[in-house]
Image (cartoon, rainbow, N blue to C red; front, side, top):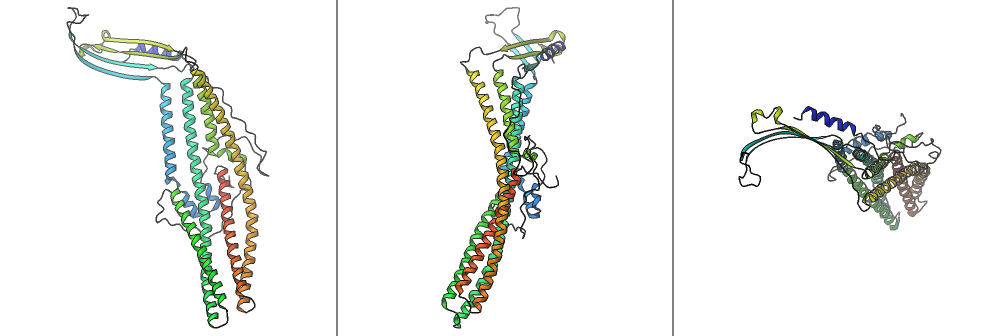
Length: 469
């Protein structure tokens, strides 16, 4: 155990060495931003709020099946890998913080020693065979006089926070991708049901045309044309099935499950794309990629302080105290005490410009992170504007296409009646049915695009938004 007077002296030296940081004072970079989202609420300078609880943002779509799927995202393997990276960063931070405190070693040893009588320093009065028992405590401490250690801790902490934000960004990306895939699958499965009904109708119509032909009431060309429509519908049905299966496999991967045997039935509904009634600028503060970019700036700022500290001396305090005796019986006693106390300082006087180069590199790295941050913020504004515009335009396209589909359906029904009554050729029916099929595909595609744009808008706002907040 260290003698009390050594412990007091070591503590005094430690307190005298107060740290000062050489890192520049951190200021959040300003970003030139528009006054508002189109005609939405005025913007404000974003500040990281990625740790704010976002909740189940996908519930804005009120789809119970989607809700169940989103709750399984934690099984995604990319997400698990990102979680491991965060845990590594947390462990690195704990290790770095430990450098701010003294390191203490306790040692104990016992030896039986026999020295040579022929050694140069031999004296007859000095025994050549003896025991040596040792009990010591060694303390070493580097005073953080110029803030090198504290800036290294700050750097590691900001890297850890950036890893946390990267994890949140990946989670949000996976959630949004899952939601977009789900709504696209929902649209495809609705197309499948319509095509199945269409194939059944066209099969019956082909049989009717064949019957008319056999009875001499219809030319053979009508049978061929009816078969063309039927086979085209079946071909389209197979193509939609292929797209749906591909999406099912993608969803299985997002959930960390094997694609083989994975099945999913979406709700038979036509959801309305969400675009919010008002979009406060603070929502962008929840974007984890913006938070990660800013924390990289803070880390780079701390790294500048670490580089500048290399120009100043590095101090080290050491102390040792304990007991040493040839007899175990009197090991813990005043005569057996031993101690030492020391201090050292070291500074490079010539390094061929290495410190200057490293300092310049750290400042250039800081400038890079500032540019990356500003680019991330500008991309966030662009994504919000893109998807707001997309939803608005797609809503108009969708409404127009729905009217076109209704008109095509009425025209097809009338063409069939005219054909059955002998007032039109079957070619008129074929053209009308083709127009219905094309209109249905266009409606389905526009619905899928509307929902994808809505999901991307929620993602662009960082998730976590609902009308009740």
